[in-house]
Length: 288
Image: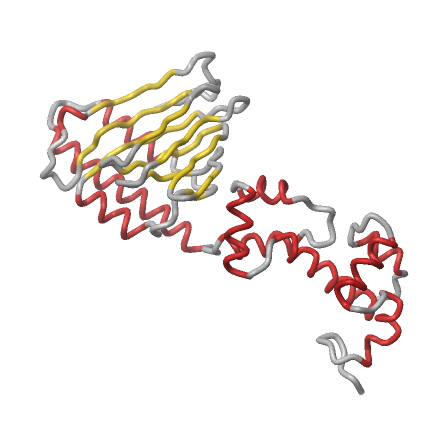
């Protein structure tokens, strides 16, 4: 199945619907599948329902609010909807989604989600399942009336997709707080803003702050300030850079502000730390 990359002027969807074939005693029911070419007005809000779903984003970006999380799915991401969890999601007005998706239910569906997805996971980044999703939708479009056969084949395809997502996630799994910490460590010398972190990790400001604070008992901003001071200590002790050069390297607004921040954090001015630091029992030098 070929999906155009050009968004439509009006909201359009290509949908395969099987609601009328649903059997409550079947272990796996296919309910809906399709492609959505969203516009800026696209918005879905559901109360707790008996369905599971995953949706792959071809292009665009938007927002998903679910289970106390505020997530930002965008091109290349997959987001998940789970039975009994109310949710709301909508497309960005300027860069609306084009996405391919499937909805299903049943005890087998529940078992697959439980086996391959962490209970609190609703979004995975950079997971290209477009080929598998297109092949699956193409088979559903060729439905010949044998729903039981089609549902069984779809269950196998869904299982394979979830296995791929699980394996891809497991190969480089890091918790969100660990990802935040790693990002800050990589950008400690830059004049970074929290908005850049949100943009990079595709999460809202409040969610990032809460997750990081719950893990490390400080905010991302506090951690950044601490790491800048630690970097300053290393430059003061082990480099010939001037205090002004260190302030510039670490993106402080000026030398006076660096002086103020350093003294507040250590109780010493940068000059005194450089002069006497080697005789303090810090991690950078032991008293001789």
